[in-house]
Image (cartoon, one colour):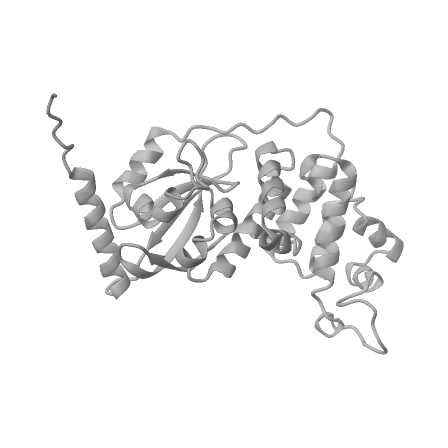
Amino acid sequence: MDHRSGDPAEHRAGIRDFLASRRAKITPEQAGLPTSGRRRVPGLRREEVAVLAGVSTEWYTRLEKGHIGGVSEDVLDAVAQALRLDEDERTYLFDLARSARPARRTPPRRKDVAIPPSVQWLLDSMTMSAAFVRNGRPDIVASNALGRALLTRMFDSRTTDQHGCPNFARYFFLDPGSQDFFVDWEAGASATVALLRAEAGREPYDRGLRDLVGELSTLSPEFRTMWATHDVRIRHGGTKRLEHPEVGRLELVYRSLDLPVANRAVHDLTFFTAEPDTADEERLRLLASWTATQSRAPEPTRHPH
């Protein structure tokens, strides 16, 4: 476990593990440094990162031990460049630094907010895209009919909460059926963990997120292994292959967009659609037609006894 609990020692451990994991991924050759003799550690040594970042070895060692709260943005930028962090990893590093700064008061607990009716109307207006709104944990908090039909196995899973709210992380790691539904299960699972890791950096005091990570760490060895990689992902999109129980194999394009809902509430709007003039579009159209038919089906007539 790490900084999500708000414990300073655990926070420092999270910073240490993240920086050490990024350092281990870079070879001296990639960094343009001379190599000679045997190396005891994979990747770069601390003193080599210090040289690349333009700081002393002592200073970088202190930083990697988690003392990051008072570090300037310029120095964080230099470290990010030395470690070749991508945009998401850089954002995560800055989030860790922000969380490490002494607070004048305890940050308020982030509250879940209701999705405005106008957002649901927007979702419902889409007929050939499966669409849903996801919070940072990542729960599906709103969806359109095609979204529910596409992700029917998630909505029907025992991992869905009592309010009918599916959670991607719980479904991936606690429902064995997810490995049949998501064709590229490992890639999807690791992306889900990386999204959770980024959210943990952004919201270290989110008790619901902390409880979720604790639950998954306890119940899923696969989750524990992926969580320990400290990979980070904020933006996501690409293609997803699903084995749908009604229409068979689907390869869909997906994209997520930030959805401002309320202060400090992080949501995104995700669309799944098919490439035009493909068998996947025909299958998605079939699913949409079937969904529309189901929604228009009259209630069965009930005869009095």
